[in-house]
Length: 302
Image (cartoon, one colour):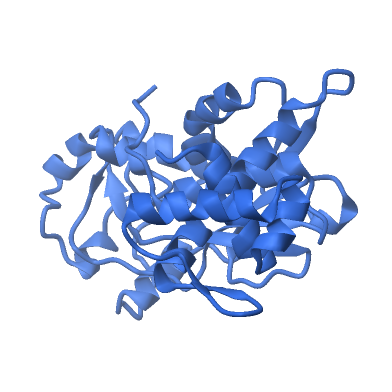
């Protein structure tokens, strides 16, 4: 890696549009900034700036480096601001649905808390979404279609919905290549919708091409997580979400039935409150964006 000082000089020059302005900000001479950038160009073997009489302009290589360095410095700034609070611990409140918290967030939360040990984190898990404009939460994981009235959506995690059940149930009912019509005749499990736009069985069947409603009586739960666990114990078929149920699908507690699926236009979104985002909120949001855009392997099973 090049020296941090050289990258800092480059970032300032790229952001401010000149070596002199960068030197003034950094408290060094213009010649020192110029030397640092020449050293980077010699290291990379490509020019980072086109030098004109009155200004410098980023080359294509310079723009590539500028985006990466700027993001990296901003990430470090967010982390430093979170950690610099010895007298007043930094706090963060995150709002999410019960199901998203249980199946997706909580298994990954230890990694975030390890990175920010001084941050006081509060997670509000409830199926009625909080309005971020009330100030009751800093970040929300919201299912729907952006934009949202109460905050800025920074990233989206798309979903795919298909029937799932326990391996034992699937084996008893020969469900490997089961049709949509046959699925509708199996014992179905329905859970309360964590978000108003979530699919229900009747909606899913309609979008999958079955116009008549399912013929079997449903087993109903007031929480989706209970419906999922009922499916794991062999009680029937539940509507599964590909990203939400990564763990039980990955470790074999649940299996997909048939090939029919529905891809909704809605997705899980990271939403940040207000125009002036506090450092703790942005640190968490950046972590969530990373998990959404470059998902890691599903955490180990409970």
